[in-house]
Image 1 (cartoon, rainbow, N blue to C red):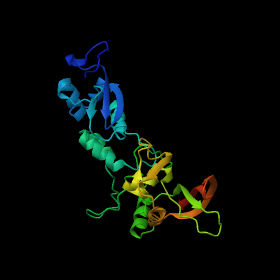
Image 2 (image 1 turned 135 degrees about the horizontal axis):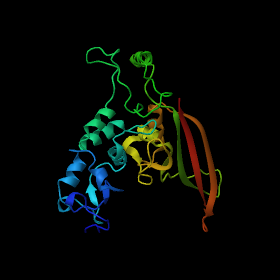
Image 3 (image 1 turned 90 degrees about the vertical axis):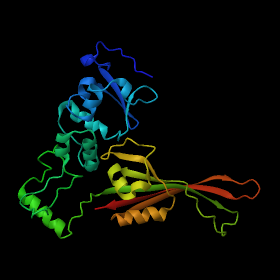
Length: 284
């Protein structure tokens, strides 16, 4: 299925419209032909200036398809607009973005994303490497530790184990459960059933703690520096979630629970109770 060319002209004599739709890993982007060809010898420049539309992959709606990370591509596209790198604060996927820059053959962007090493503190091939997750050329001077004295102090603390590079923050674990209680209140209630464990907090912290066990399908495009309350875990054992949080240095600081009687069985008078419980964890 070909895209309709409803634009005024076709650049450089090639059968590409001026406005191009891209499907990158399931994320749709709309940009100009001139943007995609703004960096000579890059992968996108080669695709859209040296090839014909018939030789490029398309999705079911006729959009040009690229099988790469759809979320990180927004930074690739931003760079191609003006050849400048601007990242959010506390950007946790700098290494992955560098890999994307290498794939799209953007050597200058690869250099900007490369970790920097303090010359004063490097000995041969060993040096104190700046944290690629927290450092960014776009951070302003008030947040920068660019002086050699600060870099030396950081290297010293890292060497002594005083700083582990982990950020502070809160993560809330919540779950809905149910249990049955008979007419005799002295009878033990049937054990709770946990259908799903939900995760609330900053996306970067949730990914750090739970990794591949974190299901992001309900909020797949949440940027790392933003907060979400829509993630949940692929397992249903509360103790497993607590162990992961403890291993990451989190401590429980609060919890609360509510319960309501949903209904009573007509014949046995057994009451079905439902509850919602939250546990709040914090890491300094």
